[in-house]
Image (tube, rainbow, N blue to C red):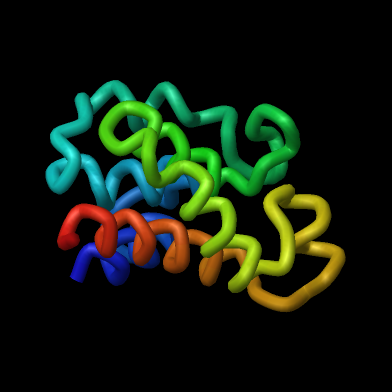
Length: 117
């Protein structure tokens, strides 16, 4: 359900379209008890503009984990690399293994899994 919400936020299916980072945060906001302003704080983190060139979806997941489960940061990066073949937006897009919407789904899937463990 939460992964589906992230997809819908990213595609703009239930309101305004959010960038990849915002979609992950919006979908996981209640699950991780994140403040509403976290969504707006990540306005500039989509479309390859996240710090260090990270995929915005991954960047959002790392932000959430940094706040809640630091012990899962490396596991998240490994999970993401397994599915997307890279950590940066530029590399992921150039490899064309998965589209942006799948990055949103995978980042959210990891977060939901961490919370349910």
